[in-house]
Length: 282
Picture 1 (cartoon, helix red, strand yellow):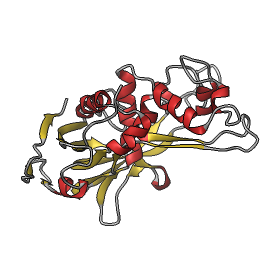
Picture 2: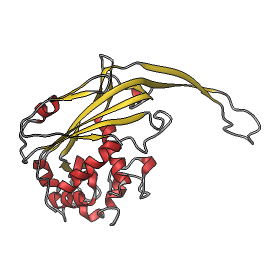
Picture 3: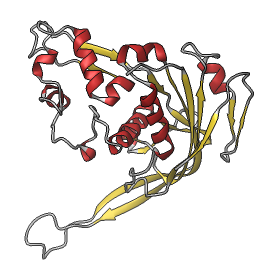
Picture 4: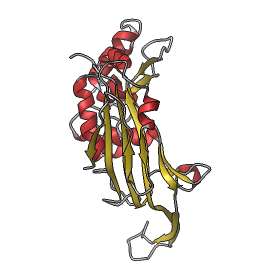
């Protein structure tokens, strides 16, 4: 399969209503904000959701979340060392028998997220006394999402009472806790897919089309107590497909042509020869 033939830029506009889009474990799991009070959803969090949606589409994913694990592997090392069809087998990462380029190529062929986002395989000591790591740079990059205006965060004290021991006849002591939510906000994130890196990982035009398919339904199947079903929704995906591998414009110019208002409405500036595709959220 040939690699990506055109540079791609994209943007995602999504809404948050009474939900915690990305809690900060170092701050009592409050929704992440910057120093000016604007809400933030990290790039790591967004890539996790893309991986989950790709996994739902039946693609092999290397970095699987614990709650969505499908192969029973207890660690990334176990998954990599497992025999096909789950992994590549331990010998694939023995750099005395397999070159790093060969191992990287096989990993990209095996796992969609590796050829899309890249991966560092840094557990080589058991297979190679030198412990050489294998680093793969992926063509798909995505920025952290930020709200279009400072967010209002509501914190609610909660209690729970359970019988943790005994025969269940005695009521357990109440446990106090806190839940936090963003009342309402519009967030925007930007990303790009670079053909020069796609050449190295084998990321193809078909792979890019699948990314385009899953982005509008980024939050489907992602419900939790912190993010009730329907509380987060993609409003629009803007997809720019350049006419060459190098692209007609820099990503900075392309992303800067999109102006998003705090109410979710947006304006697209004109870029000669580059027509954006506007995709409704799922």
